[in-house]
Image (cartoon, rainbow, N blue to C red; front, top):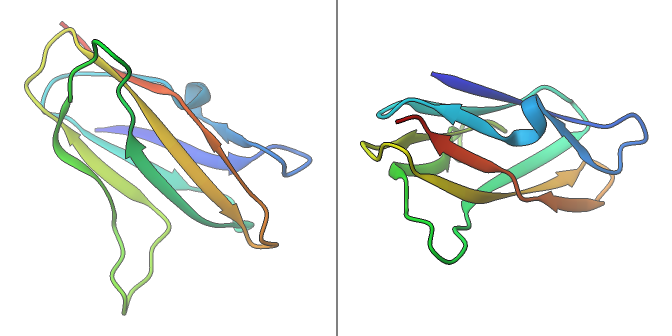
Length: 110
């Protein structure tokens, strides 16, 4: 499993993430985005491949919560796609209503 911790920077205007949100992982591995900052109200993780990139997900990133059991964390599974990479977008909302986004990359090891 690959885990990416998500929090806000010191002035709460941008995300701070493990390795700036970039990750290298093995095939068929679960990737989890773990919100560690109580001031983040929500995140949304969306694959955003640029031209020439392939879809690397066997299970698209999705929120781990349910309507009756909210959860800020997200999870997806990288498929059997060796030596591929894909950009993704992570949008966030602060508890004060401000928001932003970041565009890191997930790479699959050969």
